[in-house]
Image (cartoon, rainbow, N blue to C red; front, top):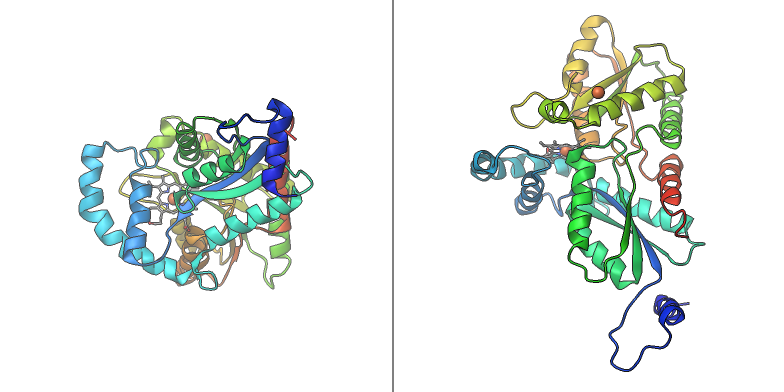
Length: 354
Ligand SMILES: C=CC1=C(C)c2cc3[nH]c(cc4nc(cc5[nH]c(cc1n2)c(C)c5CCC(=O)O)C(CCC(=O)O)=C4C)c(C)c3C=C
Ligand SMILES: [Fe+2]
Ligand SMILES: [Fe+2]
């Protein structure tokens, strides 16, 4: 059955046959939009600059007054950072698809979710990015064009932060503000303490550790940081991260202290959430901790910050400081455990709609 006939039939059921000259109205479908942070279209200077400009002019991400920030951004950051970070992206680029793994995994998550939900033939699954492509606005427009009059928007961040979840939702609302026939909207809340998420993390950690020929003395849960000042002004991110770690430690049944919570990816001169992952990795060998595992519970998919910074640089820092054994546990990505989290949360938000 083609999509158009489904939509037209749904419409005919509601309003009867359309009179001549009536504009086409498409209704009767439900859209599910998975949204991650974003990624540059390429690793060249121009692509990197475009991406970083969109990212770093987001006032949810950089809260400094524009009069102070923009001269620094346009005078220094956007002239120097694109080249340097572009080289880092090259190291972790998915050469088979000529794109970053964040984009590869997000697409795959949407495809697998669509397969899991295929019994509901009025549900359309799509994916988009907060920065870069495919943009949230373009995907909302596509869902409307397919006849979606209800949309579930899913910011792919387990822990809430204004710098991530809120800015994704802002963009969704902004895109809807431009539609005349506005769909009903549900946004999937942060899920830092959802049993299905804790269970998925625990299983992926246990599976990875069981493949090792050494036993890590410490396992570091490394979350992306935010500036300390955002936390002090009420961003719940810090508490969400610590709750995830606490529930995970309980589920794993580990002694207190084996699982450590740290924060990575500082940007700019401000103090960020601590302890810092890099400083921790540097300090541990002097305390007799020479075997560690790291993982990134706050990242739904592997990306620059997990592959280059933690799997790559993290190992170098630790080994240079005297560490002997280092392993990085991949993100949940599109694994069966990762998909069980996404599917469970989406099915919950779809209740009453399907
Ligand atoms: C002040 C700046 C930043 C804040 C606050 C911030 C919060 C934050 N970010 C993520 C997730 C990701 N960030 C990624 C890359 C990235 N982050 C920043 C800056 C801030 N992030 C920059 C400038 C960049 C780009 C790379 C760089 O220039 O260093 C990514 C990776 C994207 C990819 O394509 O691989 C992710 C994912 C979270 C979860 C978060 C707050 C909770
Ligand atoms: Fe970031
Ligand atoms: Fe807290």
